[in-house]
Length: 145
Image 1 (tube, rainbow, N blue to C red):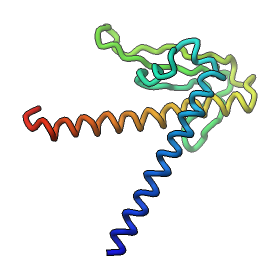
Image 2 (cartoon, rainbow, N blue to C red; image 1 turned 60 degrees about the vertical axis):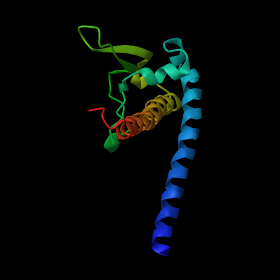
Image 3 (tube, one colour; image 1 turned 120 degrees about the horizontal axis):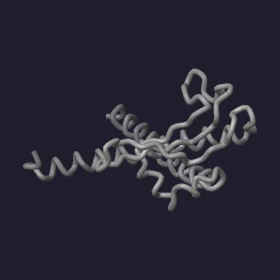
Image 4 (cartoon, rainbow, N blue to C red; image 1 turned 135 degrees about the horizontal axis):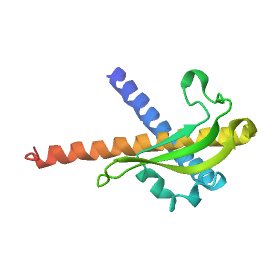
């Protein structure tokens, strides 16, 4: 019995820590939204999560070389929107342009990377909630299929 209780305690602690981290991330994301000038392209803040994805050019986001500058490239945060009515469904929009990567300060680079990763972190929670709600609808409707 204590084994089941221990597992429940561990699971509760993990979920709680994720929620705390999510709240901190959202506050930091909102700060970076202002600092990096993203608000000039997407307003209000919540509209960021209508984007299908956010990518970064000029700076690596790969785990093995996170933050590595791609020499000679330009740093840009790119939003991807989905328009089901358009011929080309996915469209890239520039959310912010920062010039050549070599000219970025260490703080600017860190803020840019933090924004993109923080957005992806929050977006993953929202996607999880979306699919959880859909599964709940399926279970309660019974005849949805």
